[in-house]
Length: 397
Image (cartoon, rainbow, N blue to C red; front, side, top):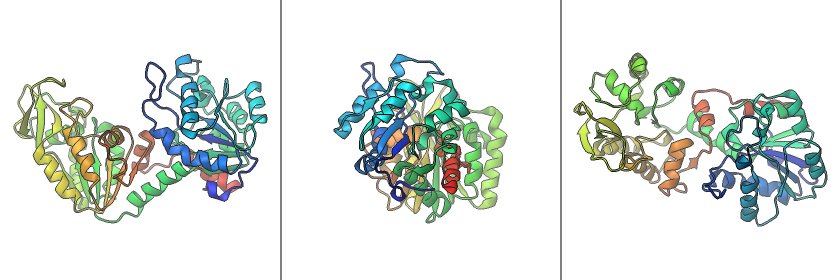
């Protein structure tokens, strides 16, 4: 893929796909700007080089209709504050009015298009819509890793009709760190996999069996593995239809020499509520009327013992119901511990990234991915449509 460093941006119309799908409060204020901060280097590069920058993103799920509360106006205002320079706001992402605004852009000026998903054609990867977006650009830049697993018009289709394509700094970083961690890792390599369901991560687990030295499993998905080993996990969330899958994965790991580490003890309660009484019990002594909602202190200590001997650690998914205290302790303990390791530490999107941010560890780990689904698909060994499209476009130009 071409990168921003390889292009002459001066005077060029640069269409940059970013991910400004950020949370807004009731006052329409940005409450978490990780994704905005992630693309600032690319934005500044284009602006400082004299490019005419056209930013495009989606926000929420308007399902092809104009939903006023999902307008990107508040994000444009926030971006202008952060950059300390004006950000013009377009009334749409295609059409004559937008074409006029693009034609009037001066070198170093910024235009933010309105929500791409106000048009159903965006998610359908519609050819005519892709051509309309492409007509706004001399250069296309993808700096939206979090949506690069989607074959949408602004991620995939547009690349067929733009003369030049390049990866932004953030996308470049995502691929670089993933490659370092998964393709050419310093060993031992430990994968921490958490979250609720084994079913959503079967492909990930199967792919990791040929890559990882240690597989550390937590979260509700660990319950399915524990039950597959014959343990009674009470009222805990379990995927009974995937018990055989868990057994098969454990057997395959043993055959490949991958060490699997499951919880030794757990924090249990009758229900997931902040005020409920909790107990710490061994995983083979879970009360029949309780459910596992976090890993216990012995598990945290055992997991940390494994991780401190590793040179590469990749983490995806929380170890407990961390959004509901007191079931946050295991997840936050691991987040804090990762910040102390002398190793390459990559945290993959979603809840685990949120835990790292909330624990103040963002600057202590090597890299925090902005993508949840995209990161998972890469862990499965899949090629992302947005990345493949960039590579194909770069090959033509």
